[in-house]
Length: 477
Image 1 (cartoon, rainbow, N blue to C red):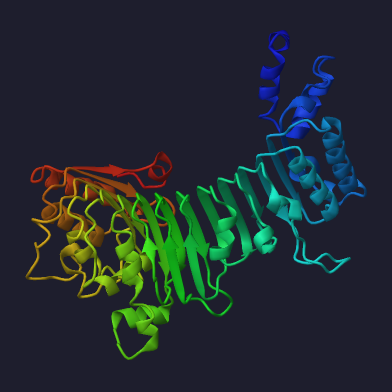
Image 2 (image 1 turned 135 degrees about the vertical axis):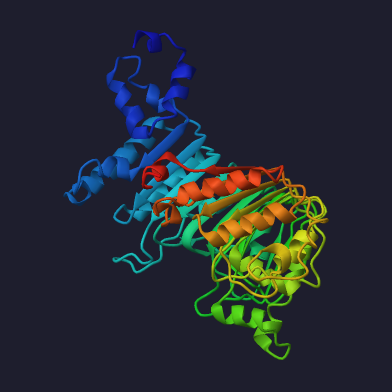
């Protein structure tokens, strides 16, 4: 303790900033010097679970919630008007909402720049029947740089004040909730003139949305439709400075504008219903539902400058509608495909041919729905014209996850080894969660013999990677 006691006051305060406010306050009993040090820490971290859940049933005890609220009031009162850099607050239904909004306004007045609020309040207050809303002062802050709003069980109501919302210094906005209520993004984003990172989950939008920002560099949107209406009418991206995009949504009927000229990395998680999958596999130009899916080519064309690209199984299925209009991904070096046994690889041959500088190819699982349009991207259906990828696919490194040791998988891997001429290294990761064929005695030995045989004929270095936990579950060879 003497070693700590000799440190400068600002160093001690910095150390205390890594503790929750309750833990920092407990240090006041160490000595007279420590009595008031915690009050000078420019960070406040209030978590009602730390205060209320150290023992089972404590939250339900009479007066305990009042004790928690009094503690927070005392902390803020002791700090007075001293500047504050970061304020983190986590609490649930039962904590007085007016007190909570008072705490938020207190730190806003003191110039907080980093604000994190995890508030799980049910939609309506049992006493007033009013939806909980964040204080209006939050949406007019001239000091906020980072703002995170979370609600694990309920939603977040952004104050719909229109022109009154203005956060001129905000660079990071993260909203993670069961649902998000705010204005249309085209009206919402101008309130943040220097915003660089935006994370929205779960955004429910109805018709037409435009994500427009000249400053935005990182965008993550998880959309989920609205009630029974899943597919939006149109989605546009006018974000010329964006370098990272993570977009999860049902396929829109149109993508009128996709301005993503500087995009480096994209994660595309387009979703489709089973009925839409049937339309994709059996195209019908007279079906309105099918016509609403075809414009997805505009989104794919808009991301053609990307260097790292991730597609889910649904997205790859939708991509089969773009085979004739598939852009050339001249900058793409890394491609990751997440497969599913219910979704097809019809787009894979064209996609691989249109990536002339691809170096790394990752398959998260090899299982997929077999169609006659998979071409020479797989070995599921015998074909006479195999090998068109042989001279065109430049992939040097391949990673396969979710390997179960089946004969079908090993045939596909053999196919990759034979028809990817530049392949130098292949890492195969065994599935850790679901049952595998390695639980059958002798299967591991068979797979090893398989690799040894191909090691003699190919220059590609193949590694089978198994975690110790999984290996222990297998029977002895």
